[in-house]
Length: 268
Image 1 (tube, rainbow, N blue to C red):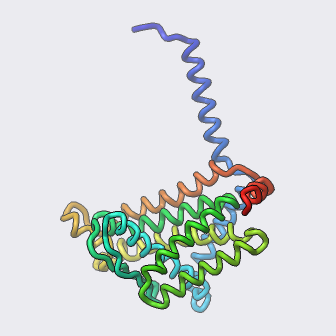
Image 2 (image 1 turned 135 degrees about the horizontal axis):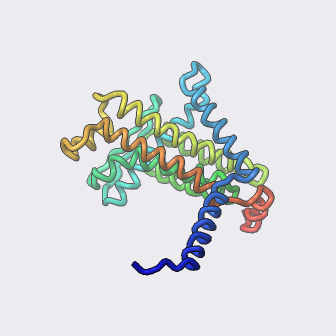
Image 3 (image 1 turned 60 degrees about the horizontal axis):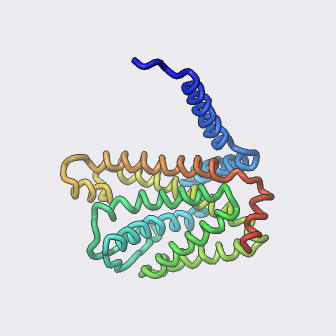
């Protein structure tokens, strides 16, 4: 065995420790990021408390319908990417929705609703750590809603799309978009939580419930049940949510004043 070069090994240890320290520093929240983490925690607590409270849950209803819209949009956009013809998107008052399409690849479009809407939510959560990123994310969200409006076939779907596009336009110009960041963050947290709960409620706790997972399980044959697919999608969605927070912590270290200057420097 060749002798170990102690000098090279020492350099390796120093370099590895430097990488580890850098990773820890990137994920250690700054004072401003701690505030965002607290806000995320408050959002999660408020959503869970209001979710099934009589009367009070009405406050969340428009946001629930918005997340249903993002779920259906995810089906539709993946359908477009797999050469499907999108016929309609509809949201109903009972917080359900349906996307009708012809063609496409069902293996891709069926899981796209849950996984796509949770990915969108994670992107919004990540961008909520930075003012400029939040403004860019609001444009992205607006484009998603415009596509949903294009495919919408009932007035509730159109109304939800127009309502939230209007809210974002209003927040964009109010106090130079200061409130837009918290709106984007809330929609992101709401979308992630709604997706996680919907997966458990529809796919895991209700084995006989007709769902995207049950259709996907039939398509895949008998390799796994719809409940197993639901558990798998749940953990993927949870990973998206956690990854959105961690990437936000690592990518956006600027303080509030620097973020505002960056946003103004881009003319926004």
